Length: 294
Image 1 (cartoon, rainbow, N blue to C red):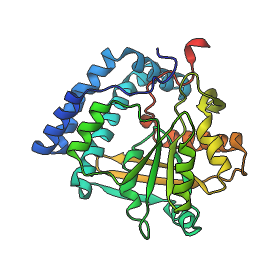
Image 2: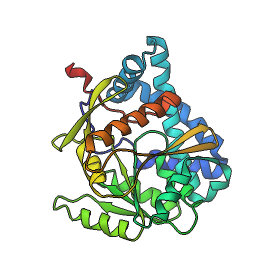
Image 3: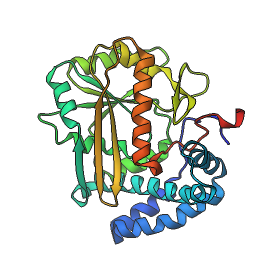
């Protein structure tokens, strides 16, 4: 089992092309049907990720062995659906889905303060479609996403070729820390800066916090940065509830400025709350809790 995230996710351009072909020619239902075979394949041949997600279900959620094994398949299936949905929504099929807002007024209140805000999310649900929710906000809202940009370039290029151009600005994390200036500039323009806080890369600085009853390593950067910027910080998740319905949740952090550990604690509690409601939508398919060394 991989002990930590390797900086990229599994997948091939061919796989994406197959799903897009079925979606565009036969509808979302046909693409979802193909997922049954893909999810089954991953259950048997993606051994490291299957072991990692089995540990999550069996040890962290305390599922029975049988329920844990069945949940591996369901997890892969739901994850595949979120990928298909992202392509569908960004390809002009937004009206095929319904959306529910829970706490979006907190984002609107943040923007009214005219100093920008930081949204911290996680690899749960389908946060990548959040920009389509933000279109419901009052006024024009610009979004910047802080990223390492280490995902498969070929897949990204293909997805961009079959979807509408995203309005999200990418801020690349750089070793010389010049991305800090870009973040400050975005906030000065009253923009939203989005960060994910749940993927620690080996060798980087980290903070430790309990999640679902066991300590895990979290990247220090998002929490050190957000706690020092003197702007509102919110935790935001977009969760899939049915085949065609999504639910956005936004919660505001109460941590004091420069208290990165308290910010992380609040974040971990918010992620735990999401997973209690949507246990199948934990999409970190690696040894998040470093269980092989315990």
